Image (cartoon, rainbow over all chains, first blue to last red; front, side):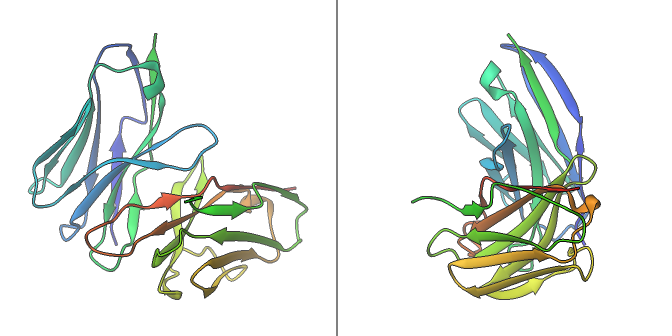
Length: 112
Length: 115
């Protein structure tokens, strides 16, 4: 089955700096790669996703890139703000129905 | 829409007791997922349903765990008997269940503590 790895496990940046989180996946048949943000005491919430036929996608301060050949995908957050502090999860969807496998998560701290 | 509703939000029980967690998915969503979150293992997929039918339960830890979805608006996850290592946050999520939309909508979670 699919296996998703994520680095780093913790990340601390100064407010205004950029943050980058990287993931790899194992199943070359996976075709959908979402990113979720989880705030303390809440469930994860989708912030951006990318499909296998696209190499990059942007939404305001966040962007995601995908390299299908290398089976890598990354999340980029620019001009970070304190409210970006949370745990971020990458994920990959297997081709069978909607099974979504999550990476281990990255705890991001943005220091004011 | 009220979103995915889970109950109870917190449960403290003693080892050996039966625990039942409940989930109401978003109306119209065809897929429902149960995840378990711990510091050590992260977000683990336990089981998921499509159109009320269990599709993959390979993540269910052992026979002490069972899940049902008797209709499109209700699912339960049961642990019997519970053990301290079952302590975790259990999330239910629903999804439209189409290839065009893969977004999972999570509930607020049920925090289980087994003493």
